[in-house]
Structures are given as C-alpha cells and as structure tokens.
Amino acid sequence: MKLNLNTKDLINVGVFTVLYIAVVAVCGQLGALVPIGQVLGPFYIPALAGIVFMLFLTRVTKPGMVTIMGVLVGLLVLATGQAYWVLVLAVILAPLADLILSLGGYKRWINTVLGYIVFSQMLIGTVIPLFFARDAYLARLGERKDAAWIQSMIELTPNWMFAVMIGELAVGAVVGAYVGRALLKKHFERAGIA
Amino acid sequence: MTRELFRLDPRTTLLVVAVLNVVMFSAGFAGGAGWARLVFMAIPAVLAAGLGRWIAAIGYLTAVCAAYVLELWALDSSLGGAGVIVAGVAGLVSRLAPGVFMAYVAVISVRVSELMAGLEALRLPRFVVIPAAVVLRLLPTVREESRGVQAAMGVRGLSLGRVGPLPWLEYRIIPLIVSTVRCGEELSQAALTRGLGRHGQANRIARIGLRPADVLALAAMAAGIGVWVAG
Image 1 (cartoon, each protein chain N blue to C red):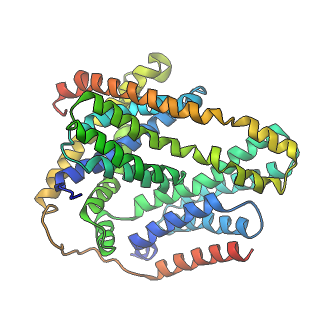
Image 2 (cartoon, each protein chain N blue to C red):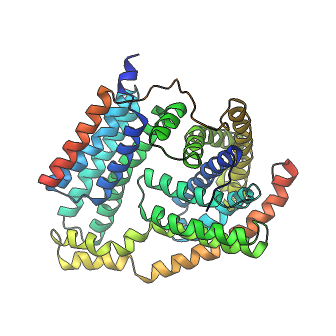
Image 3 (cartoon, chains in turn purple, blue):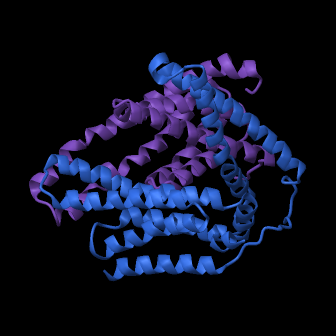
C-alpha cells in the first residue's frame, strides 16, 4: 500500500491524536470525581472521544491517516506507563478501522459507525493485564501470600467483566458517533471548522 | 548553559521512556527486581532535577517512594481484602507514576527540532516523524488551553456541581477542541511556510548526539537491569 499523504494531512493526524488523548484524560478526571465513572469508563470514554473522531473524519479523505492516529495513540498510552496491549491492538485494529472507513469513502454513515466501533476497541488493552496476565501476577503474589488472600483478589475482578467492557466500548462508540455528529452540526459547522 | 549538560539526546529519552515502562510493569516486588524498580524510579527524578525542576522532582520522588513502601507494607501485612486493595492502588501508583513523570520530563526537555532530527537519524519515514513532532509540540498547548477553558468556566460559575456532568463536559471539551484545532491550523501554515512539506533531507541546526548525560543515563539503566537479572 502506498501512502499518499501530504504534510498538512500529517499535521492534522498529530493535532487530532493530541485531542483524542486529551479528551480521554478529561473524561478520566470525571471518573475520578464520580465513583460510578470507574465502571462506566469503557462506555463514556468512546462516547465522548467520538466528538474528536467525527471532527477528525471531516479532515480525512484518504487511507493511512486513521491508521497512523491509532498507532500514535497506542504509543502515547505506552509512553505514559499503561499497558503495551493498547499498542498491540492498535496495530491490528486501526488499519482495520481505516479499511472499513475507506470503503465508505470516509463519508458513508454506516461505515463511520462501524469503523469507530473497531477503532475504540483498542482501549480494551488498558485492562487486558488485569484479566489475562492475572495468573502470572497471582503466581508472583502466591510466593508471599496465602490462598485466601489470592481468592479475594480473584473475586474483585470477575472474568465476565471483560466481556461487559468490550460491549460497553461498542455501545459507547455508537453513542459517540451520534453525539459527535450532533455536536459537529451544533458547534463546529457554525464555527466554521468542520 | 549548565542545564544543557542534563538534557538527553531525544533518542536516549525515548529509550528511557520505553525501558522504564517495561521494567515497571514486568519487575516483581522484592530482591533484585525491587532494586531495579528503585533505580528506574530515581532516573526521571534525577533528570528533572538536572533540568532545574527541583520541586517537581522532590514531589514526585516523595509520592512514588511512599507508594512503594506502602505497597510492600500492605503485601506483608495481614489485612485481608483491605490489604489487597491498598496494595493494588499503591502498586498502581508506584508503577504508573514513574512512567507518567518520565513522559513529563520528555515533554519539557525534548525540543521539537531535536526530536525531528533524532527520528530522521533513526531513518523513520515522514509519516511517523511529522505527527510525532506535532504531538510533542501540541501537548503543552493543549494543557494550557485546557487550563484556560477551566478558568473561563470558573469565572462564569459553571462548576460540575451546578451544571451536572454532561453540560460540564460539553463546556470543557468543545472549546478545548475548537481552540486546539485552530492552533493546529496555524501550526500547519507556519510549518508549511517554513518548508516542512519539501522533499529531501533538511539541514538541521539542532545538535544531537551522545553526550556525558546520555552515557550516564544509559549506564544507570544498564545497572538497573543488571541488578534485576542478577538478583
């Protein structure tokens, strides 16, 4: 695949990557203030980041930009000490999202929603270690702690939570796509930046 | 110019960011692994102090050491479920904080022109170098804009408690996006005017290369990994 991106496209990728990360960070702040935010995080983070993503898509006309943005988000998440799983997922999911979006010419609504759902799933990487590296983590703890202690650890993170979180991300992404489109109309077109 | 001595090559900085996060998330609790974590916890503090950010360095070091001690204490205590939660939270802080602080050190110390020179020296393609440079350039801007928006909302009395979470988010996020996108557009124009879009190798005045500080940072990392492997 040949990338046909000019400098302006690349700068736009950088700008929206920063915004995406910033919105996720502001949402995290809300999560810290309202306790229920922790559990609902996978739902409302893609729902709000959808605003950035929909605005980004008004700048995207050719393949590659969404892929680069996804990988950069993965790298930035890695750089702030989160799990590398986000990067691993980004390398797989971002090109897939890019493909889905490009099949719709970055315009058709159904492709936009699907593409954003796929793109958002990379955020599940932040909790993968909690669920799948748990055995290694618990084995290491087992050298120091007794079985009852380990048991209470397991009860705190039931496995079905992982499936719930994937579902939350997908629903959040759909909501985000619609919220993004509505806000695009309400604010950005009026302000002349959409 | 003494502070220049403490500034690392952008490539060294990126290496420190990467290795530090790997160590923080892979190393265990005690023995050699514990010492390795202590070494890597200290590196960003030393770098920040070298850059003249003494208060940030001391604040970070205090917080991260407290979290580390608390984690070990909670693991050895017999608190049951409460101990799990305390150890979990303290462990998360002591593992996350060094990475976050190192990212902060990277953002304040690496200059955009150096980063571009460094990444080009690594022969990375333009579609990696330019967005990465834009991200580095805009991160402080977004933070500043975010504070500005927060202050503006404060002046108008639009607190989370008064307007509820959804309008609060809308009032926070929309102005942030608008002002950042405008900054980005101006940045694009400025960069294109200065010839960023030209093909071929650019001449750079940013000097990059291995300096004493880089050697020290690499040695410190080697020592940290050494005690981990040996212990």
